[in-house]
Length: 134
Image (cartoon, rainbow, N blue to C red; front, side, top):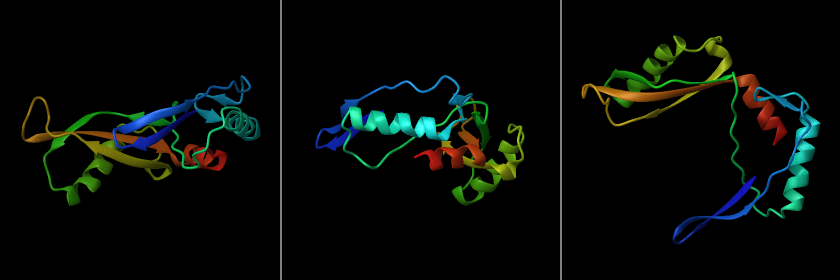
């Protein structure tokens, strides 16, 4: 866990802490024992004396798919539908069971008429378990 504050000079790391969890509490990014992980987070929060209540979390594992793709340059209003269609080819889950977001890069390295996009998808079930945890 890290606590970062915004200052006039940018962001500054003010606190950092690490705590062990039970060996089988999280497997392949999936929370198996919600209470054990939540207890570890509460303990770390108290031990390190974190003050900030706004948090950001990340997830990983087999339920998260990240794939850089190149697509024809287009207006942003058309992009959402195109990304959804393109991402379906790379997602081994039902597209209705995932959250999909993307980051646009300026232009493709190989073709200026295309843009590089980084779609990221995660199973909704996993996202919900992390939200429940926090």
